[in-house]
Length: 516
Image (cartoon, one colour):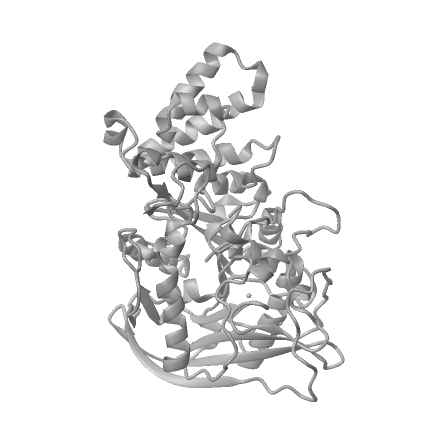
């Protein structure tokens, strides 16, 4: 799931989601924060691995497969243990030619999240069912059932938990913080992938990456790491679910107007969903109304923000009126915030008259705060609306279905990882991380690299228009990019119709020549 912001207070960190997965030597950069203690040095670590056999039906097709759940020990060039990466691999049994069978490496975001969200919500053989109408998931028991939408019929699947998440951990003399950074994380996951390809003899198989939220940042950094040397791994495709590549589009800092522009169409979609637009705009339909918001954002609104105090009063009033139309907020409120509404303020303000807040991960959700008069929300109703079900589901599945014996805690979402993250990717001080150019360069060096982008209209963590603006720049070949949109939020697969469409779109992505 989720991308967490670089800076969050402890009370907000749990559901902030931006702005808000290795056998050669890993080059590691140390951090000042100790954050996570490493495992004590032992003579020889034996990874715990469990293999189980299963059968299921996907899209009326019977599938037999094995699940391999366990640790991979990363070592340095002296054979000293550095880290244990926990992963779950699903391999279809009836494959005759592995060179024609794709393998997809899958991870969520945070940074600091385990891969359970994409695992138990989209790709994996089991799925936890949460209310599709943006209602709270309540308490156990939850519905955990065979996933007829699983992509296991299309590709072998490898779910990876980076160091500090799930059961993965630093070992020997290493600390967790040695792996917690954009580059450090990509290096360790790349090394895991090389180990996996060697062990399973799959170097000549088509390879895909699938990441969600900060996992899309990881995917871009990972492509750069994989294709950046002579022992490179060229990937066939990258799937970006709720993408965040250029963080300048999502960091509200004085002097940076890009977030106000990039978030506006998401505000329009949210106002539309909650009936905060006029009847004429409602009659347009969601897509048409959002398209008008796009055009206003990139033209009149962007120009007004750029002009600042030079903006003529008549133009100010015109922009304010249109901004009120698209956001569903009053012109008097827009005056008070100088035409600039942050996502955190918007999720608190839109339904203030009903004493409700809207979700950040998914603005279809609503919640109630202790203080209705505050400037920002207490928590994210679209976060606490699903976390109980997903957390229960992954634990039940690991120990009951997969037979995992590990007794140490499974870290679903680690605040230590997030707070200790090294965002520096260039060796120089940078205010905003931007890994999008990595994808452009990778495309120039790999003619077969294609990119899938899935966007939720109601996602305030990784807004779709900011993603569009990122892909319009950064040297990316958009003839090899497919953009898809869903009437849901950050985790669009919690909504049944969006799940069905998303799976259909991903299936098509695995078969680029099917329509030719």
